[in-house]
Every structure is written in C-alpha cells, then in structure tokens.
Length: 65
Image (cartoon, rainbow, N blue to C red; front, side, top):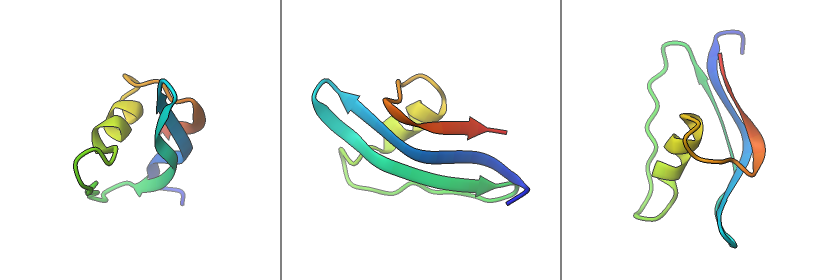
C-alpha cells in the first residue's frame, strides 16, 4: 500500500506483568477514516497512546509516514 500513512505491526504493551495489547496490527491509508471499537478495558486508549508515542511499546513497531 503506497499511500499508507500509519502502520502498526504486531505491537504488545504491558502494565507490569499484565499484557494489555497482544499483537495488534493495522494499516491506515491516506484518506481513510478509522474507528477503534471495544468494551471498557479492551485497550483502545492504550492503542491510541502508543500511536502518539506517549505509551511504551514492548514489542512490535509503529510507523507514521
């Protein structure tokens, strides 16, 4: 995908011993609108903080083009 603006590849985030994101991956292309849905405690806010680099990612990578 040449027009991608965000790539999240197999990220894992832990709070202490509790793993809260387990191998999350996604691609976002230019012009796309994306929603992140889930129940309370599912990791939506943690994912957004990881993408904004305000949350440590223990494994995986996030590329913002």
